Amino acid sequence: MNLFEQMKTDGHEQILFGSDPASGLQAIIAIHDTRLGPSLGGCRMWPYPNFDAALTDVLRLSKAMTYKAAMADLPLGGGKSVIWGDPKKEKSEAKLVAFAEQVASLGGRYIVAEDVGIGLADIERIHRVMPHAAGLPEEKGGSGDPSPATAYGVFCGMRAALEERFGEGSFQGRKIAIQGIGKVGYALALLLHKAGAKISVCDMDPERVAAICKVTGADPFLGHEIYRVECDIFAPCALGGFMNERTIPRLSCEIVAGAANNQLENAKAAILLRDRNILYTPDYVLNAGGLINIAEELNGYSKERAYKKIEAIYDRLKEVFALAKKESIPPSEAADRLAEARLAGGRKG
Ligand code: NAD
Image (tube, rainbow, N blue to C red; front, top):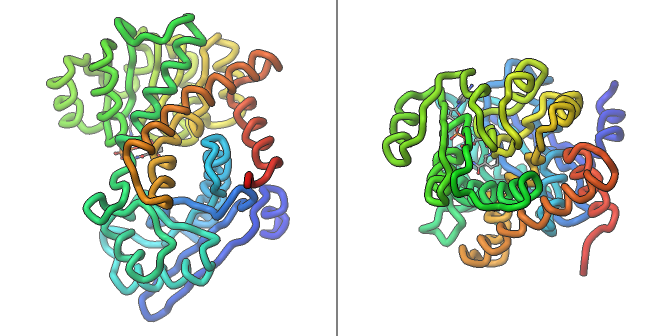
């Protein structure tokens, strides 16, 4: 398939290939859909093995942002960017400035935020060149690290999933297994512990496991053992694609609900979960707290207002579960349909 055909199939509006030989910048900015508003999404700096891998990633991620923003009821579209290179060895001020100029050339159709390899300090540097950047450090009046907001959104959404499955949303005495105790997983574990849940955890980093176990009394598990933990909720908070034909048969849970992006390896994974009578909570609806928090910055940031909006993730999941039940479809498909209906409805006001 040539690139134009692919853009047509996936609905991408625009792709910008940015090169600056002086700084060595090679970047791609993909704007997927701006029907609801300007596109917003992170910039990922990563040592992709080749051009195709970078392009595939930015196209996939930008489309996912459209669906996430639509289901979060934000006046934003989906976009994403990648800078090709190793952030540890190849990041430079000149490259960030050249990248900022590429973003500026889009005149606000794309708003850049942080992602893997691009942190708050980088966003601040980019913002000094042009205004279309969000997720600035708190001391600069920005929304800061989005992870606690993401964790709070997951926490609120889990309540909707518990109600759907058990008829009541209390965390008291519920068993929750968290895979990945990174920035989001750690914050989520603290919230769940405070709400009375019994937690099991695993992470590749034993220090992170030890730290959370000390604070919450969580049970530690090694690697794949976490899948077999008998629990009410299995929460994937590590990498994407972990829900597949190999892992789903091992699960011993009622609900899958976590922060990781693109949890389902493919469409078959949604069917496998449904066949095992496991309630899947669509990732991009559940993990939109960070995006909602960053979007608030565009109106002059208020944490109180942002967290109030994040709580509505609970209501959106109720909507998703109701449609899934009504149409006898997996919740992932229900979320896609609801997002597409919002996109078809266009901008409000
Ligand atoms: P992070 O890098 O801080 O944490 C990820 C953790 O997962 C790390 O501690 C890592 O050691 C662990 N891990 C990796 N592979 C593992 C494995 N096989 N088994 C167990 N642990 C493993 O990332 P984060 O910011 O906490 O994000 C977690 C997930 O949530 C990612 O998929 C991310 O894309 C998604 N997400 C994050 C945000 C946010 O605001 N940070 C927002 C939306 C979605």
